[in-house]
Amino acid sequence: MVGIKQCGCVGNRVVKVCGNRLAPSAIAVSPACAERRFSARRCPHKVACMKYPFRLLALLAIGLAPASSAGQADYQVVSVQDGGTIKGTVKWQGALPHLVASEINKDQQVCDPTGEKRRDLERLLVGPNGGVANTVVFLRNISRGKQMDLPVARRSLNQKNCRYEPHILLVPVQETLTVKSSDPLLHTVHMSGSADYNLPFTSAGQEITRPMIREGTVSLRCNAGHVWMNGEMVVARHPYYAVTDQDGNFELTQVPPGDYEVVAWHEGWRVVGESPLYDVMTQARVKRPVFSDPVIWSKPVTVPARGEADLNFTLREHTPQIAQGR
Image (cartoon, rainbow, N blue to C red; front, side):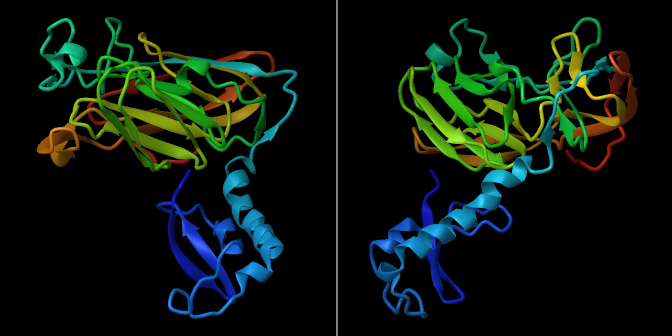
């Protein structure tokens, strides 16, 4: 649950602004206002909150309504009787870039049980056939279709041997993400983007859940000094998302017949710098890699009724990009 940040006034009503930032139009009124008065020093408008608890609770419901429903307001679940399928691949073209692995310099007994000493950052995984794994493929701006059926395995995160599993998550907006640690040491999952959380884990088997209330992308990093740990999450408003497998294959099913724009989103693989990080466990300054921006490109497709459309993408060192959208 987000914490209360400050008291403020809207017109002649006392409100509290909650969390690190608000969704558009979402101003939350604190229910605690109905339990105590605020002095004139904290708010210039003297409002007797104790006298109007029901009005304040009603305002709370109104204020939170846009934040809880806006993410799915423009997508309608319908029965798809004659849906088609979009299938394809994402493949690498050209010479592979030189990727530098990260040194495992902390908690080696847990983080490096096989003694490899270095860890691939998993930002660009290309198979023997050239297929690119971990590319998110989705339909842009679809408004009607099947019920939410994103893969269950990509709706939760596990920290195992100081690695995020899976590396790419797909979580429906307005649903809950479960984060687990299988490691008997300190981890801190820091989220930035469409979700802003900092979740501490101190023991193996610990689980924490948090709601995903805003559509978009979320970067995952460890703030406990395991600088190689990284992952990405997409919070989706509709079910037409897929993540390519180890051979670069993807499939979108039960798509209503029609013309669409299919977008491919890759997290980006180049290390463009380092950012300083305070290791909360050792109280030392460490450096974490900073990655290049995601690569986003698209193609049009026509989906026939009860038919199949093939669509293939090519990723290379300098892929032309488009503006991001959902």
